[in-house]
Amino acid sequence: MAELRPKFSSATRFVRQVNEVQRPEGYRLVGSFDDGVDHAVAAAGFRTGHNLVSGFYLYVDDLVTLPAFRGRGHADALMQWLFEEATRLECDRLELDSATHRHDAHRFYLKHNLVISAFHFYSGDLSR
Image (cartoon, rainbow, N blue to C red; front, side, top):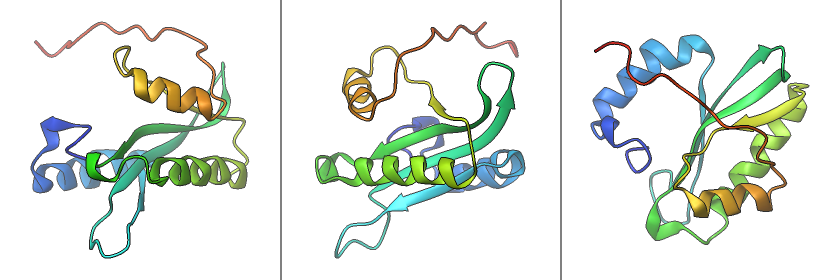
């Protein structure tokens, strides 16, 4: 996950964040493994929620593959699993946000029949 979220480069800090903040909000992780490798080479973090626009949705917070393992189908397998999980949970939609500069990710999401439906606006860091 440090590949996607550098501020959590410390495993201890990442685990603390997940256990103390993310998990209580329903966050779950799923991984993809490669033969002969003793750790996940790709991972997806997700949760479910409700809102007036989407109804009941599965939201993908994180989807990342280690650079050395890209192009081997790990992200495709995770995306397929996420769609199956959304269906199993009877979600109305699967949703995610992607930074505007992540063009490879955009191509990947479009290939998986996701559509660009909105711009995401935010205020910036309010804690300063």
